[in-house]
Amino acid sequence: MAWNQITFLTHRDIAEALSDLLHENSALSVTLQEGGDEKIFEPALGETPLWEDTQVVALFEEDVSAEALIEILKKSLTTENFPKYEISKVEDQDWERAWLDDFKPMQFGKNLWIVPSVYEPTDEDAVNIILDPGLAFGTGTHPTTSLCLTWLDENKAEKDVVVDYGCGSGILAIAAAKLGAKQVHAVDIDPQAIEATEQNAKNNHVGELIKTYLPEQFDLKAADLLLANILANPLHELAEYFSRGVKPGGRIVLSGILSEQADQIVKKYSSWFDMAEPVFKEEWVLLAGIKR
Image (tube, rainbow, N blue to C red; front, side, top):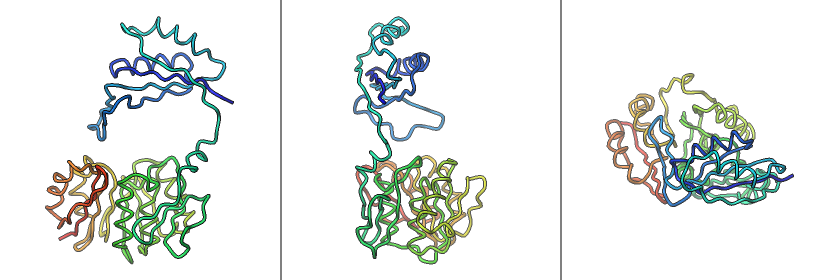
C-alpha cells in the first residue's frame, strides 16, 4: 500500500487556511513543520505559533489525484501567489520498526544504558533500561533527557524517595528505580505518558517501585530527590510548589531549560536551594540544587 503526499512550502499567514482546505478535501493527515531555520522552543501558554516559513505536509489515499486536488486548492485559496509544492509517493512500512533501525543502545555516564528491545545489552553488568520509541516523550536521544540520565548515573538515588515530575515515557523514573531508589512517584499531565510509564516500568521489572499520577492526584511532600525535565516556564511557575515538596537536604534536578534561560531559573530556585554550577549539552542546560 502507498499514499500520495503533497508538501507545500508556504508562509505562516496562510498555513492554517491551507491546512483547513486540505482536511476539507480528504487529507488523511496534515502536518505543519519548520520550513526554514527559525526555531520556536517554548511558546507562551495558550499560544500555538508557526514558523515564518512553514511546510504543510498532507497525506492522501493512493487513489486521490494530487494534480486534481491542486487545481481545487488554486481556486479555493485566496492568496496572490500559490505556494510551491512537491508531489511524492509514500510507501507503507512499519514506522516503529523503521525508527528502531536508527535507535541503538546508548550509554549515559559509566554504568547506565538505554537498550531497545531488539538488542541484547552491551554490558550485562551495567544498569540496562529496556525501552523502545513510543507515544510518550523520552528515549534518551534528546539532550535534556541525556543530561538527566548522566546526572542519575553519577549521583545515584539509593534508598531515596524520588519524584519524576513530567515523567513522559518513565525513563528517569525507571533509571532512578534501577539505581536503588526506595520509591518513585511519576507524575504527568498526559494520560498516555502515565500508560507508557506503567508499561515501561513493568517491562523493566520495577513496576512495584513506581507509582503513577496525574498532577491533581498527587500530593508532593518529603521527596529526597525531585526530577523535573519539563520546560522553563512551568519550572518557574512550580518553583515554590517544588520547594515545599523537597525535604531539607533533599536534591532537585531541573532540565528542559535553554542556556539563555538558566540564570532566571537559578535566581528563582536559589530562594530555597543551594544551586550547583549549570551543566550544558548543546543549547540545553541541567540545574541541580540541595534544599536548605
